[in-house]
Image (cartoon, rainbow, N blue to C red):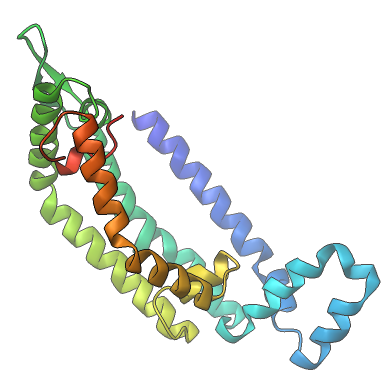
Amino acid sequence: SPEARAGEAKSDEFERSLAIAIEPITLAIINVPAEHHAKLLADPRLANYHHFLERMFSRAPHALSDQEERIMTMMQDTSLHRWVNMLEQSLSQVQMPLKQRDGKVKQVGLEELLSAISDPDKPYRDQAATVVNQLLAEHADMATAELNAVLAYKKANDQLRNYDRPDASRHLSDDLPSSAVDALIDAVSAANKLSHRYYRLKADMLGLPKLSYHERSLS
């Protein structure tokens, strides 16, 4: 509803104002000279904040100036969040026709459609999947514009912060070394045949010659 969206916008604005308010404190910690890091991390008075300080210091190579960080925080709304919200709100408001088991046609939203594609009744879930694909196809141009805008923002942000790979900021945020993520990807990729066997077995157990894409999560 318009009231809910207005409330969400106010909440986002409040969150953004808090982020801007504490940014100078965060930057002051991040910008502590590297020669003092070991001393601070070894200080028993800061033992409860050891990991927090480690994470803050690891962001130092990617931090911008106070004013630049303020600009980036403020621009997130127009350059990222509003693009994402536009598509989400548009999809949430759409109603599509779905034939029910009693033969009547009901107008349903995306949430109900996504639930229907896991229905035990194959003709019903196949019909729902067709409607979902139709709905997504009708919004493909908007989704493409959103994705391109988000990727452009992400690329600019990474370049300004000197990240050496597109997923580096995500790894830093998740407190994971990129080497661990790469090792996981390599291990999973090398064992792709396991997923093929799993879905063949699942199809056999469900009495289906082959699982359609929308049937992956059937139980």
